Image (tube, rainbow, N blue to C red):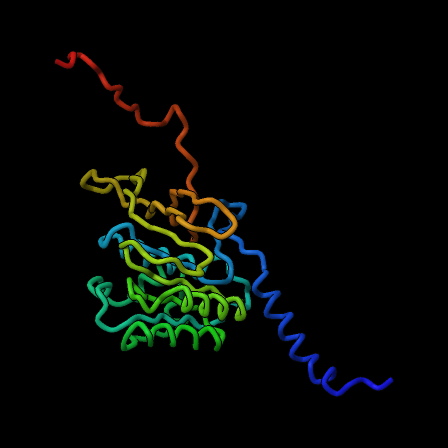
Length: 257
């Protein structure tokens, strides 16, 4: 019995529908810890928020470091597109500095800086960059343009391209999104170097941050104390009891009157 014409023409549409459903049902995973306790992010959309306005440089450093670490060899050749709106408050901290990018593990010659007109153009440029196979860093701030629909489009484009995209949001309360993870960053004091200079002052230690994983698909929120060393963010173990600073015990020498 011959096959009906509409059955032959409908098969490509059916296969495409199956592909889309499979992409939607792909298990969502959070950050992965390697054998060296280094944080690695998977492909998809990830959000980074500063804990306060003055923590914006810490959030940007986290974006850069997490974008390039743990990539497959073929992904290390991908270009990186950094998109930011012109006139955003984050510009108070200056433009991305090539030497600083290298310090955080990102080769500056791979980076294309794009300054868009507004948040709508930022989202458009990020989606087009993902469709072209690039890795993405975006600064979106607290724009209302970045909503559930826009973030879902970015996440699907990132998954289709098997690429990471890290978006910087504002430190204020933010609306829900389709991101895999949402991080809130704040700077921590660095440890002293064991050696001292001619003036007796200790050297600068490795950068440390408090990274709060506020939201992750398929898992609970977590708090990490991380340190940048050996071109990766490493999770620090809690201090042993013998090494912890003694906490003062409250005394009740006076009775309430």
